[in-house]
Amino acid sequence: MSGARGFSVLLAKELREAWRTRRLPLVAILFLLVGLISPLTAKFLPDILKAALGDQLTGIPMPPADAAAGLEQLQKNLGQLGALAAIALAMGSVSGELDRGTAALVLAQPVGRPAFLAAKLVAIGLVLAIATVLAVTVAWIYSAILFQPLPVGGWLALAALDWLALIAWAALTLWASAATGSTTAAAGLGFVALIALSIAAVIPVVDQWLPSGLAAPALSLAANKVGAVDGVRLTTSILGSVVVVGGAAAASMASFRRREL
Image (cartoon, rainbow, N blue to C red; front, side):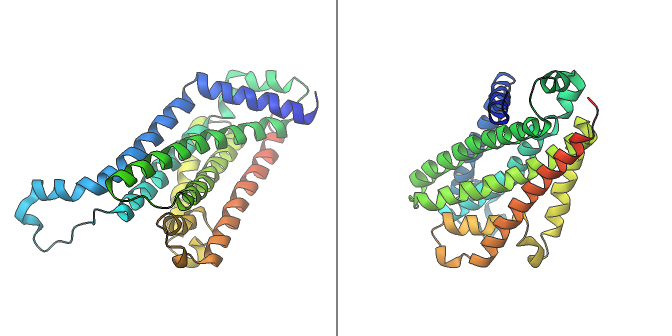
């Protein structure tokens, strides 16, 4: 079996398993709810707070009920819930097959370990891509209904940048899964990486090289504020995220090569 054909067979296997184990439908539903709730929250939260608290809000600035607020809600929800979903998808990707013994059966076929891991990362990326596009599409539709329609191109850019950030968290967790052989340890390390890099992102010069640095340019592009986008910052954030994904993938390969099945 050639390397290319072996990879395509393994990728098809991963996608079938994502559907049969309901990982794909569940993540898609989660992201759909994120896309639905984000603009609704921006629209109705001020009214809900006024009705619930009344005079207690006197002098307290209220969040605006506009498309920009909906975008901020969407970005925040995708950044938090999306990152956790990416970690959940990747944490048992290798360790789960090691525990069940299926990794040894698969690799007994004429396919290499690099193709085995690459198929898993690509499959996770496709699941996250489908879910992210679904969330952004639903959010755009509701934002257009509740506020005003914004250019589609900016929202597509937001979806692409958010997806790149999510696949970075998935790649780091995949590395942990391959290195430790434990689903629990991989989940813990993935979460620790998320927290550690989020703390590091407080420093602006560091943030511009991390996946978190993609959030601000993504918001500006989706809000049709192209002039507010720092091109250098966007470029470095994209490059930094690609390096994180590539470095984590390479580390996963190195760790998995040394592992006994």
